[in-house]
Amino acid sequence: MALSRTQINQLGDRLRTGPFTDLDRELLLEYRASFLPAYRHVVESIRTQLQIDPTGRPEKTPESIIAKLRRTAIELGRMQDIAGCRITVEDIPEQNRALDRLSNLFPTARIVDRRASPSYGYRAVHLIASVEKVTVEIQMRTIKQDLWASISEKVSDEFGVDLKYGGTPSGAEPAKRMLDWSSSAIAYLEAGEADRSKSYGYEFNLGEAAAIMQLAAREGRL
Image (cartoon, rainbow, N blue to C red; front, side, top):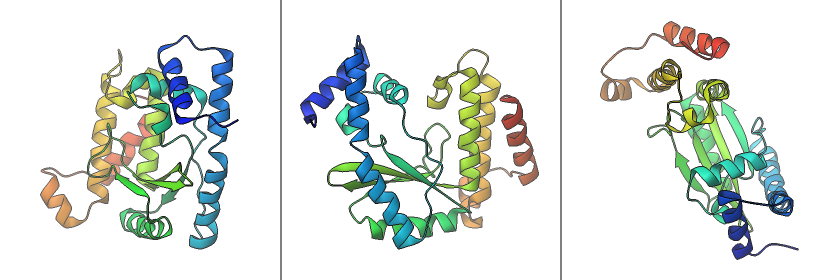
């Protein structure tokens, strides 16, 4: 039986504050499964109509959903990234072209552009499509943005998830500086000449940026 919006948000409140039961976890899994038809529709539409193959976006786990509920004030019924897919493209121009095509395919979708205004260093474009009132998040990253996000995940696995959301866990100061620096370096390297001259007062070297990110990927720290 489908849960009502009130029941969904009451479930979210229990998951946020605790205690919650095994039945609550089963209800969460049931609610998450209700997104599957919309997810399949979005992915199939992208593949057949745009000839783009969405890949790489892991399913949001119950633990991730509960962590987000506890980290934010969002209601479970308003969480928009329970189902999603990811598209990785070569560079910013290709990202903009993909965004235009996706916007035409899903004209009522909401766009969240985290390139100029990153979320704790995370840069990407998200398009929130709605299929019969069910939302599906489409993440669009360039290769460099995707590399940064992968490194951020690796570093957060070592130092704690708070690092991804602006915190500085004990011992993580060098890693946080690396993530901040490399996020800005990527934005600089991917920007056009006019944007570079307006937005940055210093020069980045591509080789240095690549070296520090390779070191971070291998060691999880500076």
